[in-house]
Image (cartoon, helix red, strand yellow):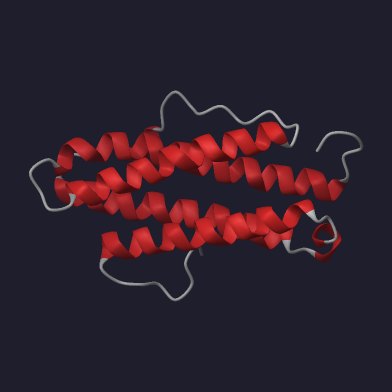
Length: 154
């Protein structure tokens, strides 16, 4: 992103930042829902998902910096995630967090495969990353919900 920034670059950067923001929200959300799952069979899945989002936040932040961009900062709070008063609400929130991440990664993928953007070879890795992260979020959502959606991220 260093040098002349095209409209396509701005579109990719905005979608990439949105994916980071979704991952940051998921990391925060798992902090909310985790305590409600203590003593349940769902706690190991919550820990695994939380760890995955932590790793993604670090990786995406580093990738954005390497690309010459300033990563979006996480919000101090995400009021739309509340309340989480029960294990059932915690599992519902987990599905929502994963669906939101899948949607963000799907959008980034759609932007990166735009023919105007696809000519940039650096986007091949981003395209692969977006697809991999979309799939991972869709799988986690399916683990939480017990079913698979036909179109993850929509």
